[in-house]
Length: 473
Image (cartoon, rainbow, N blue to C red):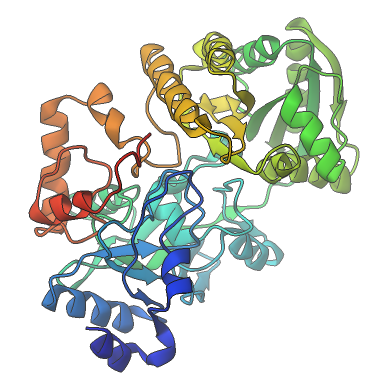
């Protein structure tokens, strides 16, 4: 099989050395135990098609992989499948400024796309915190969000069409550039499917015009609950900012030590709000947000005076997860969503869960849409700590669901949330998801052992047998 792969792609595009297999057995999550087969680095659709056909001929499963920045174990290979890395498919193929569409390959880095578009007066709106390294293909797989998705919507709202190599090696184009493509919304089914329905090889993304005016406000609070309540009050007042992000004191101090973004160290929480649009409307919205913040306990409100100050504030927010390396070598970044009205209540429960398990927890999250990201900081070398981390994670999920929330906002289900799927979905829901998956991949060769909790095919059963006991905590 490896000989056939090398004949099809070239020897330098197929690796099976121990270091490569070990590297690709992991993603950026805390979940271990993956076993990688040969790793392929195709450069175009034809090469992806060749890999899939060879895999099918040998009865081997496939795991697509972007930058490996996923946090739910979605890119962890189970049962030594062929890993298809799209990291060399990095071309921005076409930019149509008139129709505001760009065709890109899946390995294009999220931030690189925006940098390419900015001189033309456009940007790509979804902006995950990992946008400096994550890829458009990975964003499509997980339906990724980001701070500015409050106003603009997550990845699904910005993907018009996808060229996909299916599990039998055939090619399909899902969606289209017209306003209302005919037939079922298979594009919508594919976005967020975590590599189980096929491999994206070309993606048509919607371009967003750069705003004429921007204002970025930093509000400080003596209580995290006050910051959370401000978020609900702003939305209730009819103001929808481009972004609303909350950071508690622990993560704020870590960020200040790391990049010196200008956050107040003595605040229990900071709320970062950005409004965009025409200058007159931005000024009105900023003034209203400041008034609402003060009415809800803000002790200080500051508006970035320059573009450099604004960029520094956002740099602090988007490097928050790297900043915690000062505190401990490991972290578990959670991802659930709760109704905005329940933010303060669930946050209090999360702090209580951390105390009960003797864990250090920080909160930094997309407050505008209720997407929580509790950050558990720990040293994996400490005996028993990983068990406590997973137990606390399970309770955070339970608390979020009890509040009327959902399992994941943007990180996906992968192996992390798979054990909890039946807490959110009934048997008929899960059967419907299984049938959809098999409509695309009848033999369950695409990223087996992920998302759907029941072992529903021979391929999935074999993959699950290869999972070391305790991968889910």
